[in-house]
Length: 263
Image 1 (cartoon, rainbow, N blue to C red):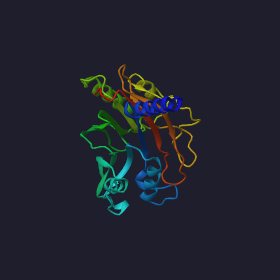
Image 2 (cartoon, rainbow, N blue to C red; image 1 turned 90 degrees about the vertical axis):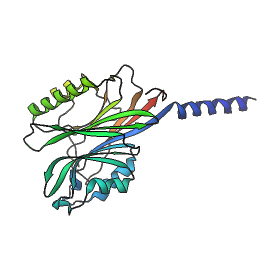
Image 3 (tube, one colour; image 1 turned 180 degrees about the vertical axis):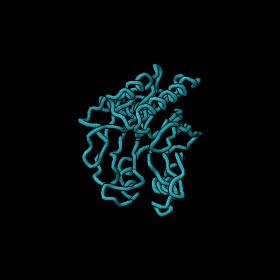
């Protein structure tokens, strides 16, 4: 009898954890068009790194689409095919007879997406990519970007982001902002973002992402928008080591979704 009760209890716990609490994995990675530390362009190494993580949602920065320096390869399309993921590519500029920009990949169908130009950067044009998708019937909105190094311009981009967030009718919308932001967690720019986003504290000893192979700073981020009625929760976040694939390390976060019946 005791064994039967124990079995029923374990089954109920497993059922509840499976139905009412599901987790998804998010990853952001500046791949430098596949150019490794060894100065070899090899996107197969990038695919290898990503497949080891196996994320549900993936943001990549510094991709080339049919440029001469990558032998006319459509990197976003090729990566999507090798990873078996849906994708959208947001070109920031025409470059070397092709395009250069950022991309978002998803194991789930992409519902909608749009690109917002971020004006004023002197080094290269920048964009904000906004993608709507879902996980276990829960709508998720991802903001993806690659900010400039110019602090004054970054402040303008944050102002644009703040303005856009203020126009969102559903204040409880689940939003995750991720990418290479080119500032550190103790910067004034990071402190501004803390007004709207949660900066996670990791149990891991380091979240350093740049420069590979021996990073000294974190400039890549995965941030959850603050909301009192949020139905996603960050469980952990960490960077992973790869010595040669890119000049950045990827950053990975695991989120838990609760109360799946609420959208």
